[in-house]
Image (cartoon, rainbow, N blue to C red; front, side, top):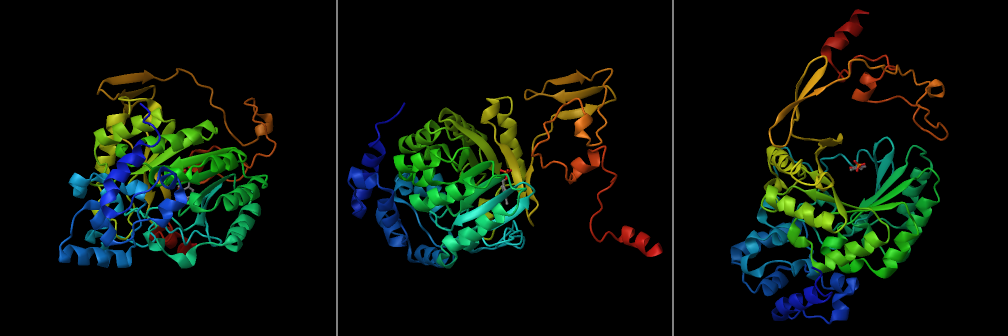
Length: 443
Ligand SMILES: *Cc1c(COP(=O)(O)O)cnc(C)c1O
């Protein structure tokens, strides 16, 4: 099952020879070599594909690149099926198309309002107990479906150590943060020493329990996962890594080796895919992908509905496609191979899970459910249940929650607040609700 380590390289060399981009095995294994040879021009694309675009197509591509730059690692480019490249899922994720310049009315440069939820440069603080920390604006490959297209290739905004220090200060001063998610750009494009420094600083903060890193390098630049990097990461547990495979074809023998190195270092691996029209909007493709992921010790974490970012219109699918895919997975395959399908709420509401319905109906003592086969079943609820009335006086509760260091005494927000015994609120009213404003006037 495992190909010899250099088989990817030999195949790539055979394909790249005609473009004069051959490499020694040592060069191919060197991530810096890939970055130095990143494909940024249409000329190189033409040579590597052994094709010539029409003058019109060329103009379109140049125009697109001027707005949204292109960068493709030789590793990732080598995965393109050159005989049928226009339909190729790797080609579609990496080579621009004119449709990126067609901006629809509901699309925004920052649909998730990440910049608005940013207390200091580089930090997005949206959820109560965790933050997104943009530590790098560099990426090995510029995904055409990038939700942060507004920042791609924006050299001016590469954060320096000073900006990073400001982010670290914010985390240090905010005890509610127990989970820090390093993102970017790609954090693994930073040098080893800077990564080590950053992780050491974060680890020194007592309230930071978990550090997560989001990276696409196992997909587009697996050579970046070096023994030295893994040694550094291992020092800073508990550390989780989430990667971004979108198509089974991206899981090559070289990627598998990178994943194995990370997993062997005790790092729990997750995967975040984006549902992309013409790339993976097919239940069979996603099923093959999640099976390959779990076989490589990667847990499918999220399947994202494509964001309303400018330039992504041609990648978007109806939400029904995502639900259909999840329907094809739940019950049909291992529970841990099923990602949570989420829509990241435009305007910054965060990720909202979306699923097929399994609860069909219920009465006072029974629920009616259906399973993945369509079998309808009932679950009889208990005849008597002693509810625990929660007044948040955990000291007197027999459930015996250890209270030291818990940050859980603050108010519950959202619907869980409406459900709670100890909250007085019985409604959540939208701001500027006219009827409520009339009531206030009467008083
Ligand atoms: C996705 C995201 C997180 C992490 O969310 P999880 O559901 O915990 O993975 C945190 N902050 C922001 C702004 C995010 O977009």
